[in-house]
Length: 175
Image 1: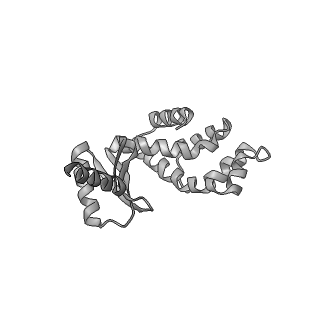
Image 2: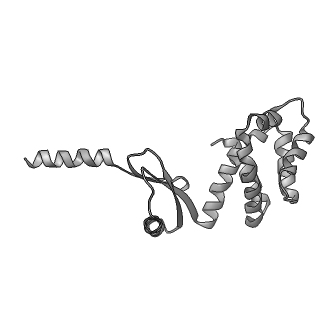
């Protein structure tokens, strides 16, 4: 995470209340996926397009009429930092999660996990960390299961390959 993005988020969070932070975060979160598009990045990074046009373009993508939001976008444009918006959104998410004591994470597994099992894991982790934990199941080619809650610094993994190795070692040592 960029220290510059953290500084912008820190300044923003000091200037507005928590409700406004969440509003700004939600609107910026809607814009961030566009950064994956070459044409969008070309507009944001172009020196041929004025700062005012970039601001007008970005503000036109949202319906939020919040002066602090508009000033924030203008400041980023003035300082040629619009490209930091994805990092700023990531950092704003961290701040909001810490403020609300509600953290989101993922369970990465080789197959889908039942909703009831996910709820049980959420419940155990919530109790362990004295916070509300919400998890999404991401099915991938990972052999085993891994729980990640980035903003709490939690990563717990169970690899089926490792479990098989440990079972084999246990059997061999018993012989």
